[in-house]
Length: 154
Image (cartoon, rainbow, N blue to C red; front, side, top):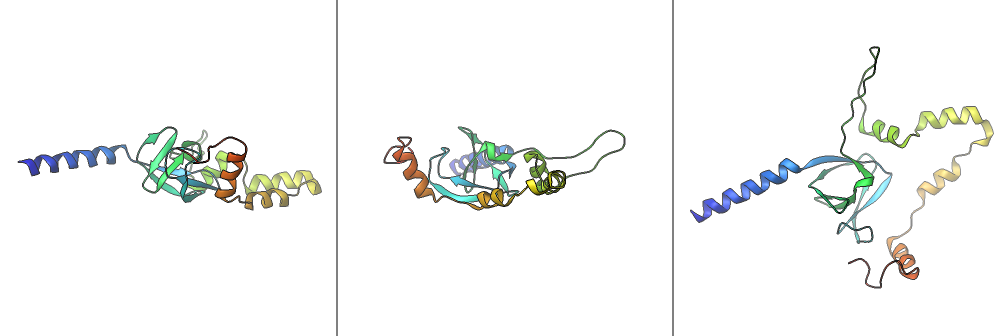
């Protein structure tokens, strides 16, 4: 009887998690998966643009995934289906939705460049997007500025 009760409890718990679990899509170039639902928590991995993750729930503004916590501003839970009036319709890939959500994509960049000629040089923007600051350097900066204690995030 006891084994049956434990088994039933486990099945119900797993069912509840499965019912709440949803798929989220990363909307930013790259973001850290955190050990805890805090911005200054140590990184346990990286999520990249368009990557799909399983959300097990939201805690303190972070989605809990099997791999770590990711801030809710970096992801979307929406599924996209494009449709419009006058017979216009279709669907979009996660990458297309992500680019549209950012408001600036390769076509917009090309159009802007064509209208503004030599005034447009995206090399500096591209170089900045490739820059990366090691987490240890970031944490030292935060500690030096009094924004984080010596022990790091709690």
